[in-house]
Image (cartoon, rainbow, N blue to C red):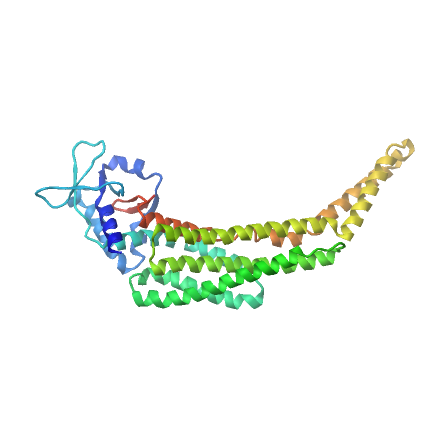
Length: 373
């Protein structure tokens, strides 16, 4: 941990000063966080905002943009405090002083600001998922998700509270384990249902199986979302930001998400086939084809053309074809609505945390904003 802290300090001291006119050019590709948003994370980050204000004030070079690089170190002035920054194309050198702030706070503020920005997305996805889950499952799922949201919302006030993190970690592990067990169970149930062959099937049987499988897929989707949410919070509570560990977490979530997509595709293909091969569909399609065939045949008889029997039969055939194609449309809509696992937001957050804490990100700030790339 001390080694990681030392690396953070070196990164924060390695700064280049840019003139005001260069600011917009240098941060166009960055994600911007207003310092007011950082301050809103809680009193633990007051020092971050305060120090940025001091550095960007008149005593520290005036207005402009200061940005943090992780690929080189600054030279220390021989008879002065502070460090020498490479101006990279600008005449002369910039004399900069190390930030008087806990480096962990600085990096944590950046990570939490990024996570906080995605809270609305997380909440929206949860609401969409819950409404599709069976009533008997909703209470337990809502309880677990409420707990996860509570930890996420309050972590920013307790990230340096060891007792809080330890207690919540135990709780999060229980939710994560329960969600993973549900994923395994739903996978087995869905495969068993979909792999069951039937030589003759009717519309009623197809719809019944479709509804059963869709319910199981929804529960799988919700369990995967809960598992990913809990795993992301476990990363934050453990504060293990080693690149290899974070990559293993991402790989695990991605693996389950890929498994969900495969299972979803398998289900969709099965029902697409069943809806086209049910007894009723075959009968209706047969009548439709016969009606259109007769209509086209009659159209070749000069006398029949006068009373337009051909057009009536062809039109009837088209309507039967449309009816056959559309009778499962509503049922299949419920399947289409759950094609997305919804876990990308957590994978993105973990990757962002990894970039910030492992020297892969560039942090920048001016008097109004914090920037991350």
